[in-house]
Length: 215
Image 1 (tube, one colour):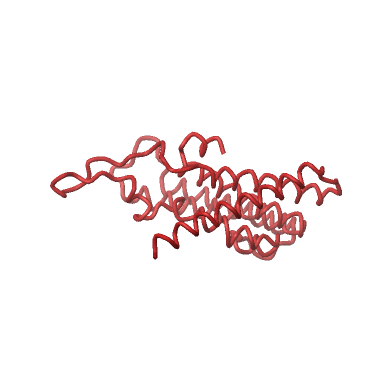
Image 2 (cartoon, rainbow, N blue to C red):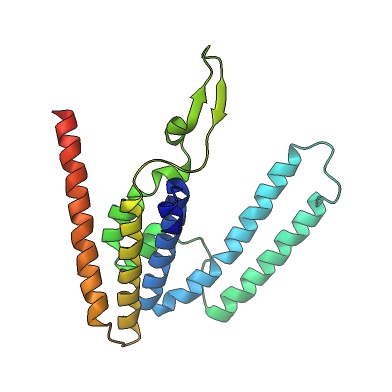
């Protein structure tokens, strides 16, 4: 919310989406504590993939930078990861270690509204597709290349992201208070209702403007 209020909307989108991904995992772990082993086990295939990425990166550099690991070093690291993974599987009785997809966490935690709403709304800019750079590029007068790519403060309203951030915070407090059998205050419930209302109004206004533009 601080980033959005300061005009850094893309940066705010990135942090907001990361927080949603954390929410999906935490909500799933609250609903199904047995998923903790799968969650911790994600580390091993990720480390294994990182070693493969490192090998591929270094294969295109000749000569290798000073201090860069050799193929032998990478092979040894992979064997160590695989040994640790096997020990983890034996200890926690996990048949297969894999990176759990975001959608699996969403399903386990029942966070469908956040996924299909705010998560997808905040996703495009985070992926940095070519279309996301259009408003940031300054093309040369002769059309031959770019003059600059601008990063930083934007002029658009930060209200939507700020409301999203506040609503996410209220939702999370409510979710995890219930998980530990604690009652949330009336003030929090009232704040969440007010945020829901303001968010709906904000989107209704945006939708009305879009309809007029199309007309």
